Amino acid sequence: MPTPTARPKSRKPLVFGTVVVLAAGLLGFVSYRATAPDTPSSDTSAVGTAAEEDAGIHPELAELARRDAADKLAQGRTDAPVVLIEYADFKCGYCGKFARDTEPELVEKYVQDGTLRIEWRNFPIFGKESEAAARASWAAGQQGRFWEFHRAAYADGAKEKGFGEDRLRALAHEAGIEDLDRFARDTESTAATDAVARDQEQAYGIGATSTPSFLINGRPVAGAQPLSVFTRAIEAAAADAAPVGNAGEDAEGTR
Image (cartoon, rainbow, N blue to C red):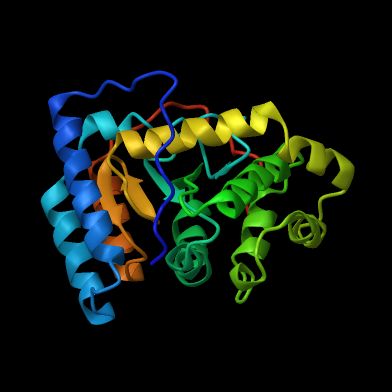
C-alpha cells in the first residue's frame, strides 16, 4: 500500500468530544488493519466485521452528515434514514473495488428506495495526482457529472493510467462534461482546493488513516468490506433511525 502524504495543517482546529475521540481511534486502528499490506485478504472481512460490531453508533459522528440538497457529491434523499459517508481517494485500489463491486448494489437496493443517502468526501492521501483527481471530481460536480466522473475514474484499469492533466480531461469527456474549459478552470480553482481540504480535514479529524473509510449513521466501517457487512450495517441503522426531516429532496447527480 503506498505511503500516504503528510497531513496538511488544519486551518481551523476540529474539536471533538471524548466519544468521538474514542471512535476516531478505533476507526484509525481498524482502517490501518483493514488495508495493511501484511493483512491476508481472507482476514480483511473478519477485521472489518469485528470493528463494525465493536465501534457502535456515535451520534457525534452521525452529525457529520450534511444532508444538503445542493451537495453535488451526494446521491439519495436528504431525509433518508441512513447516511453513508465515504472518505476515499481515486488512486486507492480498494476504493475502486468498492465503487465497482459493492456501491452499485447499495444504490440499487437502498438509495433507490429512499433508505440510503451516500455522501462522498474527497480524501486524497497518495500525492499530487490524488489531489488533482479530487479537485477534478469536485469540478465535475459543478456541472452535475460527479458520479459519472467517479464511475470513469474507478473503471477497471483507470488508476494505472494516472491522473495527469490530459488524462483528467479525457475522463471528463468520458463522463459527459460539456464545458471542458470550465472543467479545467474549476479543477485549478481556489474553491476546488478549499472544498477538498475541508473533506480531508474532516477525515483526519475522525482518525481515518487509509482509504476507503466509512461512517454509516455514525458507525465506523473501514476498508472495502464484503457487501454483507454494509448490508447488515445499513439495515441495522435503518431499523434504529428516527424519521429525519420531511424535505425528501434528491441530491443532484443521483444515478
